[in-house]
Length: 229
Image (cartoon, rainbow, N blue to C red; front, side, top):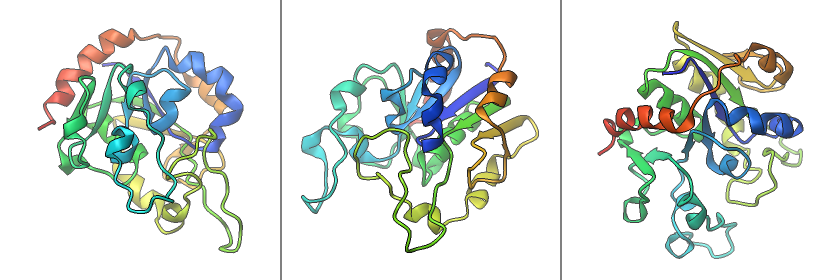
């Protein structure tokens, strides 16, 4: 197993660095979350929301006026490896490139689930969290901020309610371990339990080693399959 990993979240702090990051993450063990696959290549795509994955005709919104997730089912077929939890009603639509992990490993947020994937892989080394901003309003009367680096409209667009009512350090502290160093690459992030560094510092710290993505997937797939059901 490699000793460096990058997890790409959706936070707006990524946006100024898109051009520099796109070729970089292609050479590293990278877990993408949700719609990050539209911007970046990666080793694994992680998601949690059923409506993110299933084709449009299977989406289950009770209110037709609700902002829907776009239908990306055909795009997902082209990705090399997708990981989710087997408790969100997608078994009927599961693609060959998808592994569904036992529901006991569920998480409330996809970024947390991505860190759990590293745990299942018994990853030891350095993890760089990109776009883990945990953006929230400082005053309830403020207009909701734009929280994603992309402009795609979906059900979670500008949804800050969860961030405003939960303590991020309480949720992330479970990943503080002696054999793993986690850097939060967002100086303005509201997640404070990991050391925060700039993108410039991350570029300095990353090794020059490049991974063979297909070989790496063939290494992680049998490990993750042990946790599926």
